[in-house]
Length: 193
Image 1 (cartoon, rainbow, N blue to C red):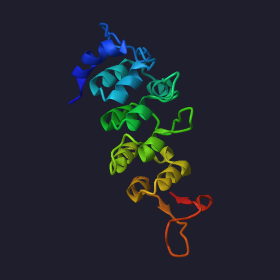
Image 2 (cartoon, rainbow, N blue to C red):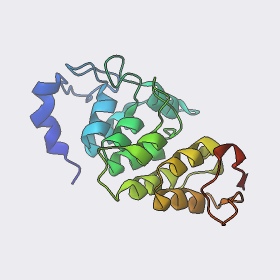
Image 3 (tube, rainbow, N blue to C red):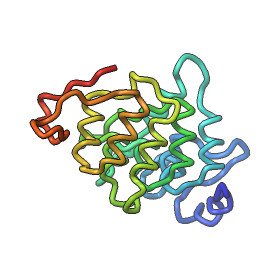
Image 4 (tube, one colour):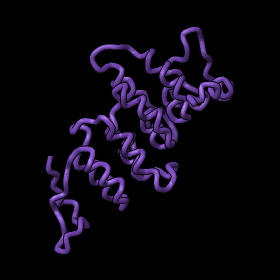
């Protein structure tokens, strides 16, 4: 279910009007949220796919657009479509955005990336954070992970999220305490690629 009919029900509330060409990715809702971010946050996969398809093609321009179209004001200021999809537990939208080239490491104004919300998001049901981490690691390259991402997953104290990331990127933690546990000081973290 792509929830395509939900868009027509919510159009008047959002202020988005679909023209012959569809919504414009940067078009703002009544709440000041760009259409592409709104669709990702609400799980409107069909509309999101249409918006992504409307973006300019070329050397990375779709990815650049996805990373730079953000909520301009309010408590969610600086959040892009991928961050909102992850934050609102919309894995199908997150997958679509990642396939289009969105970066999971771009941060909002609070320095929180999609990875942060995958690890700590309160809208993700308990036990489902690993699933969102799997979405972010699926078909990702090693360049998509950094020590910052690994630290973020470690801070969750959720082993399944941490191991999901380490396994996906074929990494291992070589730093352990005297008892062999990975409860280490983070400045001593070394990642083996």
